[in-house]
Length: 95
Image (cartoon, rainbow, N blue to C red; front, top):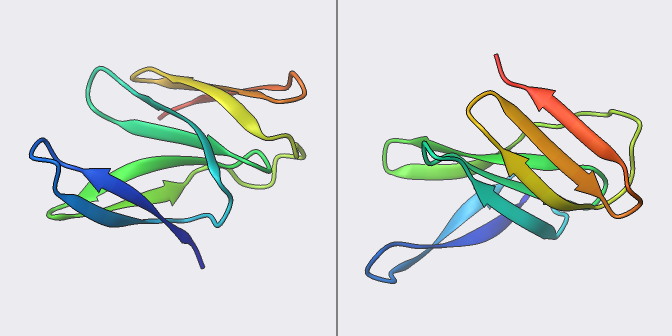
């Protein structure tokens, strides 16, 4: 089960992309190499994954014992940090 995000290309053509969460996306960032990340309610983090012409938002976070809404997110090539509405900080390192 999941939701959808609206994607616009440079010519402003709209397309819906699948998102592996039904929670509202609250924050968004992109890395220097073009990866997009979003945070949502219930500590959910998703990363945009492109497979050929199809793109989807893959849920990265599992059950980590945090329930706050992620209201800010920053990502680099190897790390992702998100801040919850209650001050919780989540940091993940990419392999």
